[in-house]
Length: 178
Image (cartoon, rainbow, N blue to C red; front, side, top):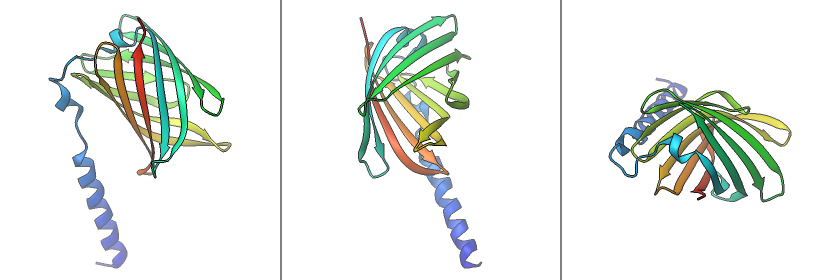
């Protein structure tokens, strides 16, 4: 085997092993309280978060005001972001509950559809987000995990990847308003 062939084989093996090591959302099926997106994302929610680059340096902090509403199995989440540098952004999600555990979602800056699975207190979203960086649009792969702590608080951790390489992480804390 050539040196290049050996390196390619090693890279493929490491990637396969790393993919198998990822947690499965089904493993949270018995965790309480059970997350029902239609219930939690209904009404007003505030969130605070930060983006860290791959070295762990905090690049941006932000606040988000979220207004959620549902009609049957179709929900709308209106998200208004205010970043630490003063910039703002609006994202409107349309989320459809497919069955007890599966959701799809769309938004203006989501490429294609987001796919979500919920079990117990956990939701895992996977999607591609078109991000503007220095005047260029980058399509970033997001692996987004949300965990309901209680009826008011949910924690969110998202890993961003490009070409399979970890680019950064987004961390959020959601709080449902009374």
